[in-house]
Length: 173
Image (tube, rainbow, N blue to C red; front, side, top):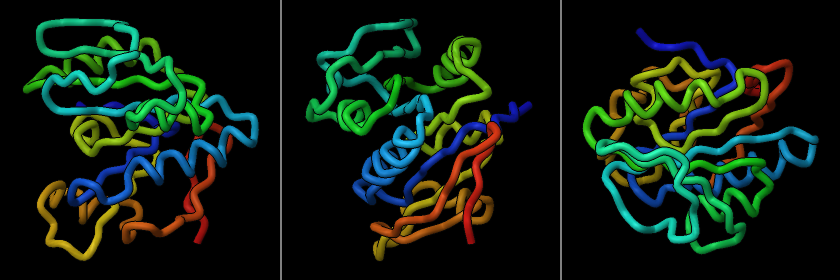
């Protein structure tokens, strides 16, 4: 059964390099400027060494949770920290590892402060307060199942008016 996370915003893309990290960073800058303590989560399938300066928080055979400590590093998580996130976690998981990982991680996450997740994969486990789907002119190659359920589907480079208040996300029309 999916968990309800009204304070979580998930940003997914229909292709790689569609602008997910840029949108995440824009939202972090906006929110942290309003004295919000933003947690950002980057999820990668499989294991990689992109986050060389991260600190291992939790490790299992199926997943690794890393915390970015180097703002401005050349990684997506470093960009998120430099944008003003209070905490940035980089989850690397394979197979069912994300399920087990989120079970452990959810006990450490607040339901009151904004959480921005860069990855559509977490949508299988949670009902977020808002699901944003980014696409460009290329054919949809991933996350096709999110087209019908996204709260907002925008083109790459668009700047949606998304606000956070009282523990929830709001899309300004």
